[in-house]
Length: 241
Length: 223
Image (cartoon, rainbow over all chains, first blue to last red; front, side):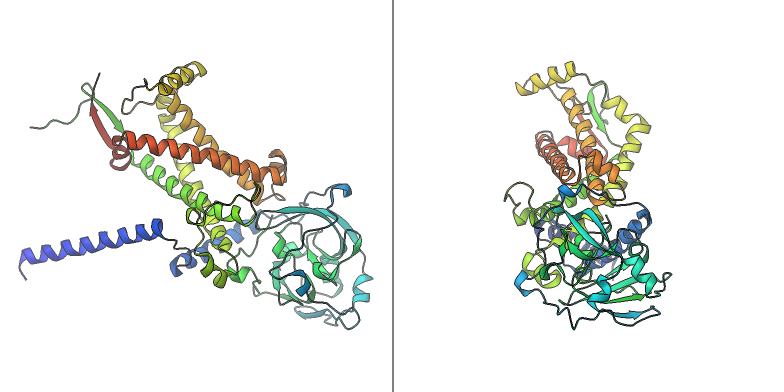
């Protein structure tokens, strides 16, 4: 191969490289590369980093602002990926809350037993990942009280939830033990209506709305991150406020 | 022999490498932040039913996203937004640190008084404001300070929206959660206005683009 040919090849390679970077640029500007595998892999790395940063920022004692009861919205916004008349109707008599994982006493709980737990109220702001927010009044048992009572391993990393509508969610242990994280049995001083999560929802004012699972049918404690319904569809896992 | 342009006969505009890198990284980050921000905004608009056209937003094809994420691209947009913010944070910090420490800001973006601003504004509005490469008039100085402040406020209001519990004092300073969201939108609008004028002026004086790409541009005096 003579020298000229060699140079021509080098030039061609350069031309190809330039062409490819130009192509990448066109992709960037011309059409949307969001669902490209490389981009999704980058998102996965950044979202892990963002979860880490948020867990560092999180304080187990700092409380979410509480508002006067007069500011609580009575007809709270319904929110799910399905219409409210599709919401699962949980039978109060046959219902059992199942416990699993790193919990000493795994005996299931009836609604009656759950509702007999000590309760307190909070008027806090529910913030949706989409941007809307609403102040509501929730009443229920601090999750930490419940986890202590059933002998959960509080040194474990995660608490997972399974729901009657196919939803699932998980949170970090520090958030699970936060004083304002409650098993909410009531909304606006009334028994939690079906579409709002009867028999109870996990109300976490230090997290975005989708981290507050409804119609909880099972709670488990684990050291493996269980993910979540929206988290597995690209939303940030920690999603703290 | 061709001689290099000389300051005594030419107006020179020079940008050190650090300024150029920080400038273009900020430009990229801001485009990503605005595009993805508009897609996030679209899911729950602040102003009535106004939504940004999909082509102007970032978050992927809504139909494809419905399958992969069960949403019209909000997960993607949030991912872009919370990726872009780190790029913007790093490039903005670099730009500010350099501008403040090197003296670039003090030398080129000051003095700036209401009097000077008014004088140059009137001159610009009546098309009598000359442009010398490498020198900023009072309107430009105001615009540059303004956009740097707006980006800072995007961080402040953005943090207030992102962390209304851990940084509740900041959210309170921004007038509460819903107001912080509106402020975030308003400062975004200010940045958009800056971009429109900035790009229009670059089109009018293309040599400024050469300086921001290659580091130096020169132009013979034309008085």
